[in-house]
Image 1 (cartoon, protein in one colour):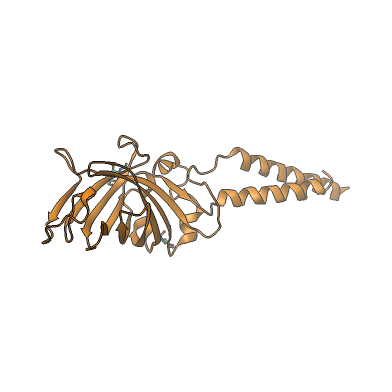
Image 2 (cartoon, helix red, strand yellow):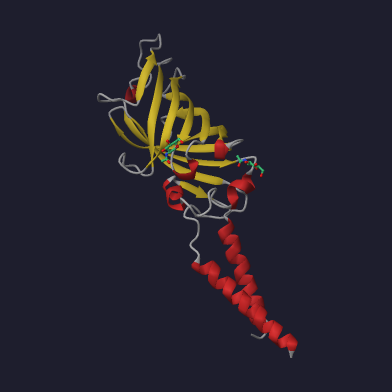
Length: 236
Ligand SMILES: *[C@@H]1O[C@H](CO)[C@@H](O)[C@H](O)[C@H]1NC(C)=O
Ligand SMILES: *[C@@H]1O[C@H](CO)[C@@H](O)[C@H](O)[C@H]1NC(C)=O
């Protein structure tokens, strides 16, 4: 008799847990779970040369006279410094997520390949104040370029990974580029565990363009389903 009551209680607990998990919204940033603690962040970068308020300016003129990269108006050795806006969508007026601050140097004698050395300086939500260090080769002739994530600070301390870099529009030498950053940190499980500041600011966290893989929410769902199945097989 007592055993039957106990089973019934266990089944009710399972049901309540299942409902609680289903009703709770997932952290806005979670889109996928691959279980390896990879964080995916997505940005659009606006590299503006024209107008009175450019975000990229040339600071070194290469000695060669031939223009190696006509679309960029650059020659071998030309070096530019940038402080480009990072936004959530390709529209420059969309939510500001940070800045890309660093240098480009045209370091190929035979094409429009840039050496990029820059920090993604994040400013939104719980990313505010964290940085991601990017170093790599941007062969502008390629559709998608891969650059390295070589480090980071704050939330992204010990970051390691890569950036997929794709120009989505050009207007003269002004470019809009989509950046998809995939990284892990020495603390993958800490980062993975729960949206940093809990539920507060989960909205701005989604505004940060963060997409975390390996989220706890999906795992919690799986556990809830298992518990519910076990609960129902108890004859509840
Ligand atoms: C980011 O942090 C700085 C310095 O703490 C603060 O002034 C700024 O308002 C913060 N920005 C956002 C969007 O929270
Ligand atoms: C890494 O984990 C340690 C211990 O849990 C924690 O103190 C530290 O803040 C974490 N670092 C980052 C960058 O999350």
